[in-house]
Every structure is written in structure tokens, then in C-alpha cells.
Image (cartoon, rainbow, N blue to C red; front, side):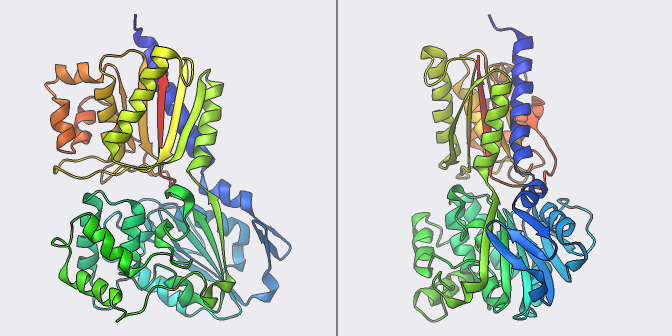
Length: 446
């Protein structure tokens, strides 16, 4: 017999486990862990830099974690910083002394992003051979650091971004196209900074921690091509929806009428160094540790899960059913953890995000089961264009929804999970976390 107080305890445990994951990827802690200054020697990972050999130290960057990363860099370098600018999402801010913050739009770029990118580009262009440029990169940087290629406008980028977000394209596919519509992405920022030395500190928000995908790889040689952009457009059937100017630009690149993005073997990258300060697996490992402390047999499925959100939810609920039925792969009380970033192919005009949709699809998958709690949340605190990080579901979700006259299938089929969970008071809200390592999913079974 299900006991309400046990279910409430499990919901609280799910939040504790999620928060433990967040704590492990706090950008300030992560930067202090991999960077240290002794006298005038700055050590970043395995690399050492004698600051006496540089005339200026410039800090630039973009991403949702940019403010926290900048705060840590200021704490380490203090007055050695000459100047800097970092572009962040609205309200993802910290109090800084030497580095300017520009707040801009995400996931769809806006005019503030353009203005901030132009200022950043000018600072990068003014860097000289004896300067050290520290570049802070985190998820969201693609939309926040917007500098359209010649002949393209902000409106072209906005329309293209919305179409790509709605067609089910992966972040790798979205950023492949973004890189080929930009003056700053796909290694072009490194080209602008050259011949200065550039250190890129990167908080990963992509599956596999691919440097050329995180924030569209502004400081790394690009492995994608105009030809791949062409294939992505055909695969998702969006040619008739994209702006004509965007298609013309990509066609010029495909026909070698405009230059490709710089590739990894280009000599301009010889003075560019990258360090990944944290990623999704770091969050999952700490969440796993917390689950064990709370008395659960815990297992991480993967930090690299991709795919259509509803399909991924079906796999997770199937594992939960297996645990209850047979005790495999874990005996209850069990905690299944996963990370990565799923996608949604939009079919309706509802309000929500991939984590809320995951929770709704999962609730439908566990409707006849007891003692299961599912929390799915974005580590940045923002799921889609909403103020929620995600949502929490359990076996009472559909019963309570029915009492309110909610038909779950209708909400799911119109991508309208936000009002569904809002009506149940089951939205999971963290506020801006100033970090971003994709999503954490917590499934508890007793």
C-alpha cells in the first residue's frame, strides 16, 4: 500500500540529488580547482604561463555560466586584468570589478547580443602578440554571442534559430549551421585574436564535450562544413522555411564562393589552449554519491543521452518497471540517473521545454505503478522559454490531473507541459543557476 509520506520523502530526495549534481558544476569552484596563481605563474590544467611575459590580460566570453566564471577569474587574477567583456543571459549575473557584463537573449538571439558581440569582437581584434586573452565559454554562448556573417541580419539569425529549435535538430546540427552564418563562431574568434595567446576555459553543455560544438566553438578548429549544413537542411525538410538570404549564403559556401571556417590544422591555433572545467558527468557523479548517502542503490545510465524526448522517457520508465518487477539492474530502493540533452519536434504551439515534456511523458508511462518519482531538470535553471528548470512526476500525477479535468495526451501532443504541471504545482523551479551542463534526470523507485 502506497504511503503518501513516503512519496513526499522521495520527492524531497529527488531534489536533494539534483542539487548535489548542481553543486559539483558550480563554475567558480570548478575554475578554482583547475586554475591557480603562484607569484606570477598562472597554472591552468597542465599548462603554465608566466604572466611577466604578457603586456595585457584580457577576458572575453559568452554563455549562461559566464558571470560566475568571470567572478572566479577576477578572484584569481585581480588587478592583473586589463579589461574584459562577457555576454550572459538576462538575470544570470554577478557583481564584477574589472570585467563588463552584457545581458542578452537566449535561446533566440537579440539586439543586445549583437551589441555585446561587436564590443567583444573589437577587444579581440585589438589584442597583440604579447597579450594574454582568457576566453570563458559555456552553454548558451551560440545565441548570446551573435555576429552575423556579411549580408545577414539579426532577423535572419532569429528566424533560423527558431526553425532549427522546432524541427528536432540536435545541438550539434544547430551549431553546425550557426558556425557558418557567423563572423565569430567556428574558430573565427581565435582567428581574430591571433597572434595573441588565448586560454579557453570551457564548461561543457554538449554530449561528448565536443569543443567545436560548445557555444559553436569560437576558439577551436571547426570540423563541420558548408556541405554538412546542406545535409542538415535536407534531413529535417526545412529548406522552404529558412530565410532566402541564409540559403543563399550557405549555397555560396557550398560552392566555394566564400571561405570555409578555419580547420584544426590551421597554424592560427598553435597559441590557443583549451581546458574543460566540468561537464554533465561531473554533475551525475556527485548526484550518484548523494543518492547513495540517502540510502538508494544508484546507477548512472549515461551522460550522453540524446533523442526524441518522448522516446527517451519511454526507455527510462521501462527501466523503472524492470526494477520493480525483477530487481534488475538494481534492487529497490533504487536511483537511476541520466544526463545529456534530448530534443523535441514541435507539433503544437504550447508552452514548455524538453524536461517538462519528459516528466509528462514519464507520468503517462508510470500511471499504473506505485512508489516511483521522476524529476527532470535543466542545470541552467531554464527549460525551454520558461521560468522552470523542469518538472516532477509520480504515480499520483495523472490522478490529480484528472481531478482538474486535464487530459495529458492533449497537453503532450501540443507541447504544452508547462500549464499542465503549473496546475498541479509540480513545476521544478530553481531560478538562474549560473551554470549549464545540460540536463539531469532522477528516477527513484521503492
